[in-house]
Amino acid sequence: MRVLNPEDNISSIIAMVKNAKKFVVIVSPYSYLKGWDKLKNAINEASMNGIEVSYYVREKEGLEGLDGLNVHVYEVPLLHAKMFFSESEAIISSFHLMNNQDINWACVLDFPEEYNKLVNFFERYIKLNRHNS
Image 1: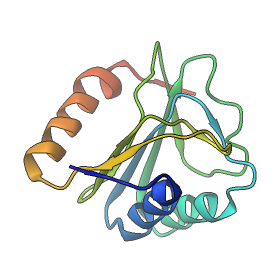
Image 2: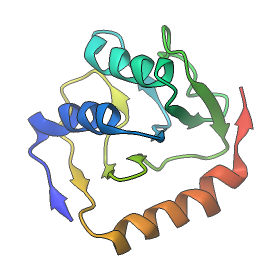
Image 3: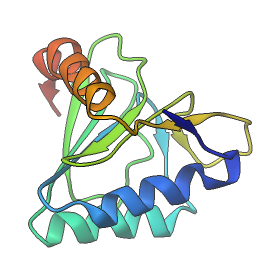
């Protein structure tokens, strides 16, 4: 696992989305993407290019701030986890995708066992509890 510099957090997520070949999963209970056009464009371009993009937010609270995204959005009760992954890369973080100046950390999971544990956590606790919005 590698800790990113705070100024590299969003650019690393954008790069992960752009590098995806099959799918992208975004888990951010709350989002406010206004002003993050590069991130929104990367997400929408991936979706338009046939990449399956799934976005998970907190049920009844997380849908605001996603204007302009053309992706599958799912609501999950009590969601607080923040993670971003594709078929080959994964990032975990302390931040919601909110365009603010808070100091937060993000870590790239460099090893297959870390990636697999994250995906297993996602499938067991988040994906199984999702609702279409």
